[in-house]
Image (cartoon, rainbow, N blue to C red; front, side, top):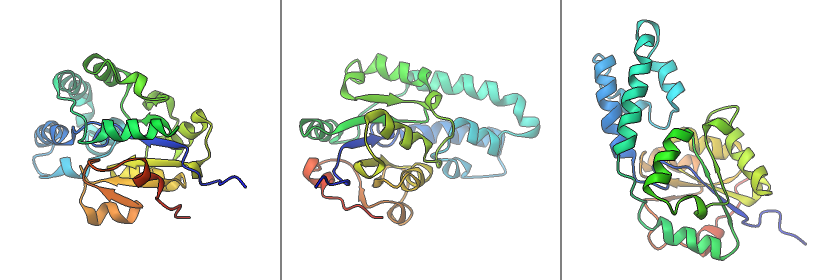
Length: 220
């Protein structure tokens, strides 16, 4: 009988999961938050894992709405020059998964402009995945499961056959809400926050392969 929980697809968030970029974003948003809200130290930590619209809705409201376009312009310039280094061990893990027939997708709240920067700096990136879904493809942002359910559908897999790789709290909640198995990366948040929302936790992918991931039990 077919195993409905067979590992068929790996769904990866982008920042903090594929690329080790979260420390760079902390610097950018730290400066922006201090400019807009000097009375709220540490705000950049509390908005981690949020979409740009979610950040604006939370912290750039009222008189600050007129500053949104300036923030977007500074963010675009920052992303154009930021380093995009793969999280340690990511490429060997991806190769291991694909060699075992696992389908792969990027599921990110980043937009197409951000992805153009990725493709420019990493010409090998697009062929590494069976699908790349960005914010333009979703009706709802994380923590809604919409993005991951759409990715599963695109790859022809059930949610039970998918494993999500996430680092942000909103992303982890999205994977859980999609009723998928979840790998929590400790690149952005601490173990105490990530563990309740994931099935295993990793600091990076060194020593992790298909056998490691396929052994994760279905939690529901």
